[in-house]
Image (cartoon, rainbow, N blue to C red; front, side, top):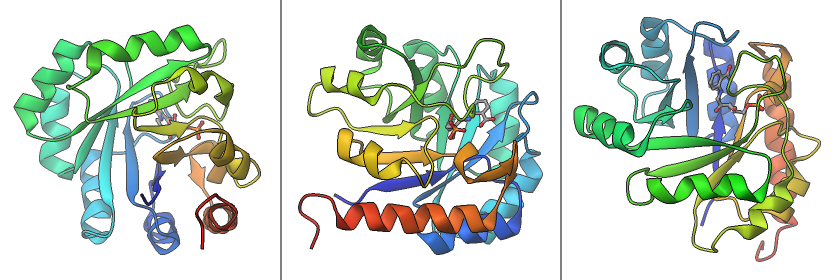
Length: 221
Ligand SMILES: O=C(O)c1ccccc1NCC(=O)[C@H](O)[C@H](O)COP(=O)(O)O
């Protein structure tokens, strides 16, 4: 199965283009005012429209209410919603029913016990995303550029499909892929020159590192 690659927190046409050229399967847009990656839904709509169908557009929200989600969906027309707060399984089901879109649920992971949180979402979440817990004092539930101990994922059942995120970059992606069974990976800070400022060269270097890592993976031609 081909690995999904999500470049998250995009804000500009040149960095969306770099993500698409590199081969991103997903492009993510952040709707969280405290984030340096926060974007206006109309602008995200223009960027996603320019990307056409070359990648799935993901709207990332944090405990958003119906009115906020309605406005984002209306303006941006995402292919998927990523819920990155404390949304319950019931809330996920309600969001899916209201918008008719697949939903990815993010989970903060530090230790194997944190994986217990995923069970109630089985059959409801269309995809799981495993991220690091925010460092002390951070106001962001994601996009903190910190990794967690990937070894804890060994406790997962083999059939759990997930996206791996948290502190990934060109320097550690090979190790991340070799130590996990991630079906997808998600990167944000690792392709930024400053918080919230994606860098075309860093995006290109990330994809180069991905390709190099993929050729070293078992089963690669
Ligand atoms: O990126 C943000 O600013 C953000 C803010 C609020 C909720 C979620 C956020 N990001 C979600 C993502 O999917 C990030 O790509 C993920 O957390 C990985 O980020 P990083 O560790 O910076 O690569």
